[in-house]
Length: 400
Image (cartoon, rainbow, N blue to C red; front, top):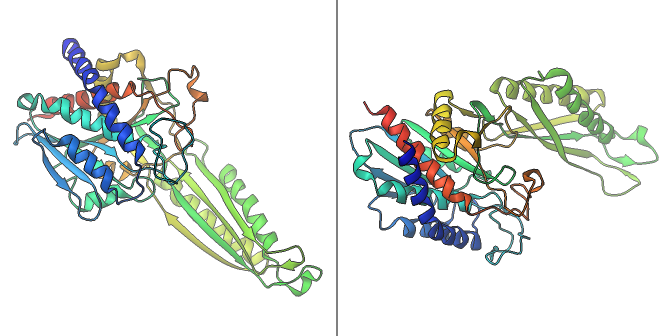
């Protein structure tokens, strides 16, 4: 396998210049949400000479491309997300965003380029593949649930396992970070309204002031985490938006409190939701207010299958060496809609380090979702090689 791995690395490096061009073209024209026609067109063009079975999405601008080796063999899926974030870019790059208010600040442009590279690399050895590789180019990861749209349209039909890479500038370039079990958190939001009775600020006894109740609710939410949640099955609750009143001498009628809660198990997720509801009910009643609460459930916990994670780590180690594969001690509290895929088929996601070479401490690199996020494009060759070796390894181990 050493010689094969070396060949994969060499071929990935040969593909890198074209992949850099593709990544930069996508970065230059970022698109948000589920409708990404320009990005879709670039992907289809990049795959056009590979003799793949390509299906375009009906409800989104997704692209599904099948590379068929042995049609009677199993199917492994590799996924890359396509969409950008609704935010400004301040990187100063020559290929910085030309779409105002949009930026590829989470590396999805590189995810697309790496997946195209893996398709190109694997297509060259189609005859030796004992099955099918499905490439899932997915829009709408950044809060739009694009994976669910693709699942409803059949992207997982016949799929036996699924893998994904996500870049991170906060790890050494070319290193891979893996974790079995819960890897990323669920992401849900709460929207609470305390409704009282407006009045003059000098005569609060004639009014029902919603602000004290809202303030107590904020403090109680933090106590909920420290007193009611198992420290070894953690939760994060953050109040991110408080709004009430218009001026200094008016007691308002309502106070709004909004935020997010993240967990790494469905049990704690449900427990925190119940706790928020309990606090809203009790505190609003204590302050003689009406309490209104809406909880909006977002992406579930991203849970990596243990055997798939081990396979991914071993396949990556053949490419980059065991010393460059790091096992995460704990989940991260960000969220991913690849979680929907992993709820249905066994698989795993890993983080690929892309810290720019001029930054010596990855912890100091602008993180994903930063308006100044940069990445080491050379690491994309590593991502291509890892993608390809994971797919090859999985197929050869699972052929009947």
